[in-house]
Image (cartoon, rainbow, N blue to C red; front, side):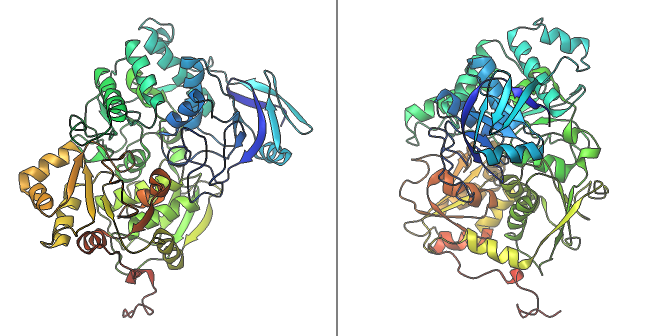
Length: 569
């Protein structure tokens, strides 16, 4: 390689920290200290502050851009970021830091050979003109956004004819398009804002700055779950120094024209997108579900870019907006279970992401199964916690699974043994359960009804808290059919607007030490986010733990081959 691609300008020097596989900064890195908190990652406990952080690409949540911005504003950010694959989430955070807050942080992309050479050097420096590492000295080539084929309306926005906010939005959208290799932008029909989660004060600083600049969305735009129950956080004991800013963040996006839907499952709303519709969504599970289960089209827009796309109605025409990048680059043969229950799908999603952290997979062997929308929701959410890919295919099940795999697609496998090992990993905590957590992503009306059925008229056990998080549209359905009253009478707490990945004390029970969940996503992120230990199981297992205070110690029958489980062939 004769040069390094400089995507976000800046200078920095420090010791190299190689993170392979890549990290989700949200749920994986402490936003205050820069220490890796992802308990599943080999770099757990490592400080990234002041280091040159190298990873193939990031993975996981779109909220990582907000965490990166907070680290920059706290002076605990990496000195530089170096990737060898396309990366959007952390890159976008650095662009906001530089353009809006005048705190630049360099981002480079290298080919794999040079990437490995820099990693071996152990120390690197990015100057105004070069990357230096050991004996390597490469000139920097800046991303050139001027070559994009823009419309007259795009150029008018870029020139400031629609105000400073739209000019900034279009400028950064163009930079992101250029670094993605796009030649032009495309229209999108709707947006979904993930940046309304109060992951850190940086999220509020950004939203207020954009609101004060006059930002407004121009396409119908929904909002993700937020960090408090809107309008009720005061009576729930949430400290004002958290509840006030979290509510203000949500209100800022509403003031910019977004709908206060406050759900991380926008695909369950009445006006969900349809196949081949180009949308501009953020939030990893929502993006993966829209692409995979619906066949709509959206790249995984990072937080902050989600607002810019909704403001301009334009997105880089790249990635899975196009046909070819939607083809699978890895085919994963799954050893099919016999009569799996609902725990199978989030576990499968987690393992699929682990097997394909940087590419779209096609999962085969599941053709006889018939996953419902809740199964696919759980699958997509867990996949997004371990993979940076924006979608996956299930042969014979998802709408685009018939696409031929990409040329050169490789192969991997997921066996029942792998599923048994993951079950043990997810259930290493003591069996005594203090808290049952349902709704990551937000629980559907059907899941809430099924949970009530599994409780079978029993009450929540003494010393156990049970919390279900839902969107306002589901809350209305549960009130109408009486499920809300049934669950509350049994001792279940139902919370609107926020979800488990943004819940905080005292709404999160401070005394709880062991959490039981049916969510593969929360089983992954929960330990790092809460400092607590996790148990995992089916919705029925969660109901049993709620009523007895004890998690099951038995492996699901389907994790064994039919003969070993005593099942006739």
